[in-house]
Structures are given as C-alpha cells and as structure tokens.
Image (cartoon, rainbow, N blue to C red; front, side, top):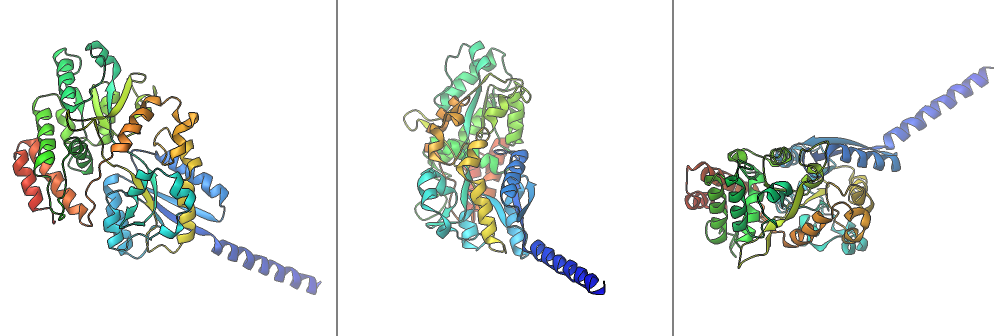
Length: 413
C-alpha cells in the first residue's frame, strides 16, 4: 500500500513536471496593429484565432493603437528592451527602422514563392537598400470616391479624369444646391494630409527631394499641389472641416451623403456600400485619383504597410510563422473586401473580384502609379515640417510658397 502510494505521488509529480515543461515551451507573441482603416480589429482577431488554432503552441496578444501612435509605440518599446514580437509598419519607416536596427532583416527568409507571387510594387513597402525587413501586408493607395446619385442629378455623365475637372464638377454640384461642400479630404495636421498632398504632387510630377537628397517640394509640382489644396478650400468647394479631418471623418461625411467626392483608402469602398453602415450604399463610385492634363493620367500615393519583427524579440521564428500566415494568399483572399491582396494571381480570382469590379479596375491604374513619400531615415522630421506647412497654408497664415520654403528649411535635410 505504501509502495503504491509512493508510486502515485511520484507519477503525479512527474506528470506535473511534464505539464510545466510543456507550458514553458509555449510561445506568447505580442503584436502591435493599427486601430483604423484597412483590416478591422475584428478581422485581425479572426485571422489570429485561425492561426492559433493551427498552431496551439503559440499564443498571440493583440494591441491596437491609432495610426498616429504606431511609430512611437514601436520605437519606445524597442528602447525599453522588450515589448513586441510583431509590428505593423508604414512604407515610410523602413529606412529609419533599418538604419537604427529596429527591425530584423528577413531577406533570407523570403521564399521563391513569395518573390514570384507577390506584386512587384508591394515589395517596396518593406525594403531598404535591397534588404527586406518584413512582409508586405496592406497594399493601398488613395482613390477618388464619388456619389453616383449626386452626379446624375447634376447632369454629370462621368467622374472627373483630371483635377481641374473635379473643380468644374464640384462647382456645378454646389451651384445646383445638391451638396454644400462637394469635396472632403483628410487634411488634419497628421500623416493623412501628407498622403493627400503626395497624391496631388504625383499628378503634377513634383519631387520631394533632389538628386542630393535636399528638399525640392517648395518648387514646381510640390508648390502647385499645395496651391491646388488652398484654392479648393478658398473656393468653398472643399468642406472647411477637412483641415481637421482624418480618414474616418472623411468616410463618415461621405457615407452621410454630405460629400459628392472624397479621397480615401481602399477600405471605404465596401463600408460605404454597406447599408448597415452607410446612407449612400449602392450609390458609391470609385476611380483612380485624377491626373493633370498634359502631365499625368492618374495620381496615387504609396500607402502600403508591412509586418515586421522588432530586433528585441526573443521569438523570431514563431513571429515569422505568424507573419507568413497573416500575409498568405489564403488569408488575404478571405478578407479581400477591406484590403486588396498583395498576391498577383488573386486579381484573376472571381471570388475576389465579384462585387467590387469597379474597385479592382481603379486599383489596376492606381496601384501601378503609386508615388512614394521620401525614403530617408529622417522622414519623421520631414513629415512634421510638411504637416505644419500645409496647415499654415490652409489656414491662410502663410502663402503656399512661404510655408513650403519654411518647411524645407526645418526639414532636417
């Protein structure tokens, strides 16, 4: 009896040790995502649950922050020596993150299937100096959305193909009393304004930096882009609250029928067409952002984002496994209604294109014309200076020329 009891105790102890060892072997990943645009929080949670179901030894803690906090959260966590195993990063950050050793170089982990299957333009999202610091995840640019019913009432047969045509059509709509402020933009003093500005700059064939890496946006197309923004506001065609709007504000105004035109990311198309979300469902048109007659057919900004691994992570292999799953063609195809896939063959899949043929047609033009914001380790300083310049010009406290000249002097370049 005593021997049996001892065996039972010993067996229970060994089982306990075995369980503890198993628990310690499990990995917990901390992942940082964005709380707005593209994939919704619910979608990211669903993707993650599917991943952990297939990988029961890995747990993923998700944290969502507004875009405006994403960069600093990543950098500050790195400085504290811990924090995240996977982070979402903007196309404008690889230069800074690579230079400062914030992200793991994953070039050698990229397979031939990935290299050949992902759209070539998507790789620019995660690369710097020929090295890859993550996988592209959100492939995006800004499109011109329009209210088909408003255009029809105004007697306008087709959406504008040039930015001057947008002014002409918006003037007709305003003069007919159909919409008080026909155009909505994301012009708050944030990166959102830089994205709208870049879209216009690309149309005017402007340049951010010259061959020596010095500011050049204060002349030529860069100056013309900001002048267009100011003129659109001063004319009463642009909603004056655009100076405080971020992308979600633009979506709200457009979905409420308070704008005939809006510049926004891919995700707005299906949400604005959702009758549970929108008053204009079924009346939403979308085209590539317009061009400038004699200069460009369309305009676009590279607004893509990638998933990377902070160099402080202790779980690089499992973090990479999670990233591969989240960026896989199967996962992206399943959630293609809010963010178009990075995989080339997805665009010939009826399951992806059905119901959003107009968006796919706009994407074929827009994604091919994506214009990059400057690739520089000092992008944050440059962006902050430009954001201030745009606000000053929109508020009328400085002319576009003076505002951009000041931004060039304060850009840190």
